[in-house]
Length: 313
Image (spheres, rainbow, N blue to C red):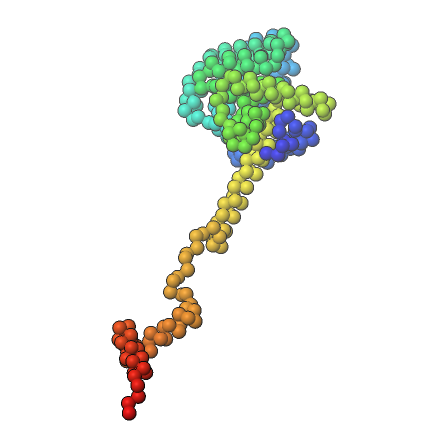
């Protein structure tokens, strides 16, 4: 990831640019879920807020108004849809679907109504949004099959301007310290403590961007930017890995990096001296060459004596 895209250094211009990149990184088959989560459901809740005369009527009244997704059966189905979205965006555990389906309508109604009404009341009383969200997420996690990450997804649909979804990309980007396990490979425990850390870091980033630009920034926008930046960095790393693999293959094909075989001993060209010795060995052996060293010494003595002897008269 480029240093300029780190949460501590990201400019508002880069923030806006990557926000526009978000749709291009969406997985296949997520369009309907994305439309429901980002537009249909929040708009429906907004209309309901305007239609009610007071917040008490909205949050503490009929159970239908506490439903986060659909008027009938609502949050039971929405939780399943939430899991489907989570499967596309992060870690998905299919065994939890059966637990989600086991929640009764009354249980869903009571828990979501209390969680959402308490969250709104905490915000209006001046409690920090991080504290209020953590409290509501903890309450939503009482539903079977719903952990802090999925609970944050439900709460983020309820209030997308304030509440961020506990996505893998958002957590890893806000905690980014380098490549590998310090970056987008960081392990996640998906607990309440990690969600609180996400919320606090998100608030710091949001405050800095709003101060820099003079414009409002929502938690939902920050989540989308984190997703785009993370996917961009992952694709860049994948491209680098593929290029390195291609270079290694080309190197092997061209013979670079391979061990060279030692030169053959029988291909050595003999020098002139060795050649002459070879010729001498192959020439016929004379009688003198057959004489031993003792024979030669005896022959030398005889010649010497003959030379010293007086001439005969």
